[in-house]
Image (cartoon, rainbow, N blue to C red):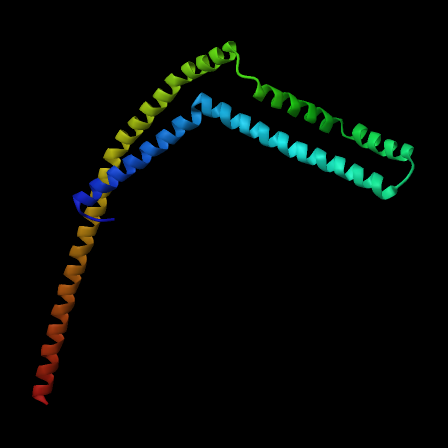
Length: 187
């Protein structure tokens, strides 16, 4: 971390900007219309997955019938057994068909009213969340400044310690050099 106030200010501004982006993303995530869209997409994906699995079961049943090349009664019995063995799949297909039909029909006035009411009820929560995030950012400003000041103080202490030790070492080297010179001169 840098010692300069400009770097500290830039770091604080960067942190504020990141926090602002996080708040915006959170507000977007709790937006009722976005929640509805995400849930609808999840349901469509699940229906597609189930449909693919069921179609795979149907393909498997068809392959089994073709491979066996048995009598018509044997083929009918195999398909019936698979359908009876997977009532959940049949129910999910019906549910998916209902969802598909519902998505093709435009929303009624009552549905639009309910969606708007949900959006209006959620708006204070979004605003409150934004206020809480701003308060958190303002409360973090002082500790960040204190931490930066503490780092600056520690760095200054380290510089002074290194400077003092360097001066002491230089003095010791000078003293030893003089001792060595006097020893050499005497001999």
